[in-house]
Length: 400
Image (cartoon, rainbow, N blue to C red; front, side):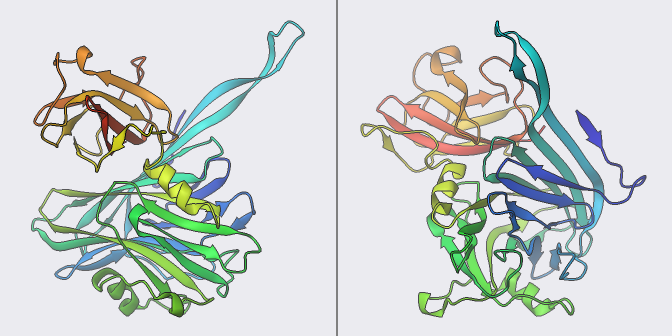
């Protein structure tokens, strides 16, 4: 079912992505920002504000803003393309007769996808935002931003920030702590009192993407935009306080990516997943979502650093998956969805090669599963197995 909400005909629209245990709201009224992020297990809204910021020293900064109850005042992004919502549903049998024949069923939401785009003329970028959620009782909601330089000149030293101010629970401002897992490129704020046991934040989805994390205390500003804070967020080196400096308070966390110079027409891609967890399970959840522990690897298999190059990434029709390590000797490629389910396996014998694929040779994936069906938009995990029991892993984003 495809629903187009045309901003020119209706009031600004919003949509709640739900996974069973997590809820994330997207809103045309807050382009480049997220207003609510809930952990259903507690019923509390764990998010005070989260927003995207982009900038360079020669262009300045563009940013989104949110929250209705304590606004950061207006951001600089303007809505370009209205919110498009696509729900994937399926009929599920809810009752059967004595013979086992179905007598009743209901329409169940399987997954939801939203897309919207917004623009900032000062920095000269257009952002395409893509959110995907599976209604499988999961606690993660992946988001991809494709940020294009729409100007006539290069953007020098382009960088992107994802900011997350998660007050737990319900904007308490006084009892939350920052939390970082550098090797997973993940940051969060957790409940300091332990009464609710909530940890809320995000992780980077593209392995080794160069995300650098930081934390900030007492960000709250209800009287007007603090341009010094915004500029510091984008241009200053992200900092993480020493353990002795961390105390109860209004903590926020953020990640920053530096893309170098962005030529006219080129795009920077940033993918994250919003996560909610109890205070002891955030690192495990981040590892699962990123694919670090999606499949069980036996003791005889030797995981190695990612030696996979995917282009284009994100992709729509097909992508090329290259083995970038000389002498690797790939025998087959496996593709998993974000929940760890194997959706496609491509063996060398089925392709153009009769021997293991090596450096300079490629797999081609058409975005379909083993049955030839088109897979929905989302983040997919890649594992390439070699003839000497090594494995290489990577990640690709499919945008329909």
